Image 1: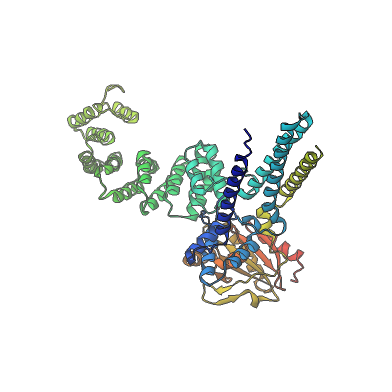
Image 2: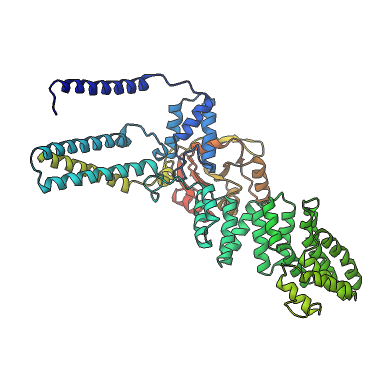
Amino acid sequence: MNDPVRLPVIRLAWLAVALAVAASLAIAVVADPPALTNADRVRQLAEDFACPVCAGQSLAESDVPVARTIRATISILVDDGVGDDEVRSLLVSRFGTDIDYNPSGSGLTGVVWVLPVVIGGVAVGLLALAVRRWQGTRTDIRTRSVLVGTAGLAVLAGLALAGAAGSRRGDDALSGDIRASTRTLLVEASVVPPAEAIEIYDRVLELQPSNVEALAYRGWAAWRGGDPGSARTDLHDAVTLDPSYPDARVFRASRRLAEGDAAGASEDLTVLDGLDAPPIVGDLVVASRLRERVADELARSGEVVAALELLDSGLIVLEGSDPRRAAAPLLAHRGWLLATTGDRALAELSLLSLDEAIALAPTDPYALAYRAVTLHLLDRREAGSRDADAFTALIDQPPELLELLVSRGLLTSTGG
Amino acid sequence: MNTVRAAALGVAVTVAVMVAVLATGRSGPDRMTAHLVGQPAPPVAGTTIDGDRWDLDDQRGRWVVVNFFSTTCVPCVREHPELVAFADAHRAVDDVRVVSVAFDDRASAVEAFFRERGGDWPVLAATTGRIAVDWGVVAVPESYLVAPSGYVAAKVAGGVERADLESLLSRAGADR
């Protein structure tokens, strides 16, 4: 096993490997780094500092206002010829050493650099000592306990250091919490129950008090969770902050309608019509029939003209939309409001809208049912019955329409 | 055996010291927010939204409230009437001046904000990033009370109230 000739050769080989590693490290340290452009320097500096108010994000990664402001300031300083060390000193003097990912080796922060080396060295030494002792004489149980305890302490020390270096806040995980960008949090909040979502939006608003998306959605979550007071405040604040944020308008309109404020809901929807809202917001309004329900409430309170204006406002937005059939529900409702005024001339006029709705969407249940009833009102019973029959052939038969047709004698029972 | 014990004791003492330092040290935000109080006020100079030149150095001999705000920040909107009331109350005596510094905001939005909500004190809105960094602003609203000597006397984070500002002035010994 211990060949006296091979032993020096093996030792020499190990020595050569150690020399090669040491030489490579020395060259890497001594060699001049490649020249950096100003943009490179700004990026590097931004990566070397933590965002002061974020959890586990650097200045380069964060999009909160303070990170944007500091990045812009770094850029100006670098362009003005200020050196990296000076920029680092400024940031540390203004925002504290906590934000410095590469703290200096002097003073108390030097402990961060020295301790891992000391602890690692002691741990290795103890292990070596333990191996020698186990190889030689039997080790008593107390020695083993001390060794295990020492190793445990070393691990704990390492974890504490990792926590101090990687985490910006006292309540974060030891290794830092890189999930917590506001965008990630907002996505996360959209898939959890209201109570959990509210907690997540609270965190976003701690990071970005002016995040209108978090405010609007927290208000919506509060509404869904049965807290109308908080919902009212958040949605009001969201609309005040950014009157052109479509989601906040839709949420507030829905809340206002539910609380009996149809005029307020109508105002929000009319403003929404003037915004360049993403299609998903329009789809939400259509799917929930929010505009039609608001118009119904207005008409019920005698504000028929306001109701028609609200529907017309939606129709104007849909002009030129593709497919055009998206306008059919609003046209049908427009016709229905006219038909139910009790004025025969207006009822005749309503057929224009109802006919157009059915031309655009022949299987729209609302258009068919409303025209059936309107024709019935105008004593064109045969034509009305044809629409009622067409309605009964539909797969989608909203219950309220079935009840309407039965109540007007166009269907004999809710089963058709 | 003695070597092992001594080394283990050394590691244990080191860890204990480290835990004590980490556990009892002030948290980051605290340290950040308090560092300016008692120090000379950093520069605040620039062109106001009215086009005038304004410099904190020219205000020596007066108390100054330096207010960092944003038009899209709810607490800033809420504190604004308090600042207006405070400025109105001190206008006749002219013992305290207010200056607002917009943080990460558009000048046009700042102008509209003051037009709609009142407030006739100087407002800096353009290229204010460096001022905010010099003051270590992390989350608006933040307000600082600067003494006539040019030193920072107090800081209020999260929105000011007129009564609190008056109380700070009284405690700081303002002669009104």
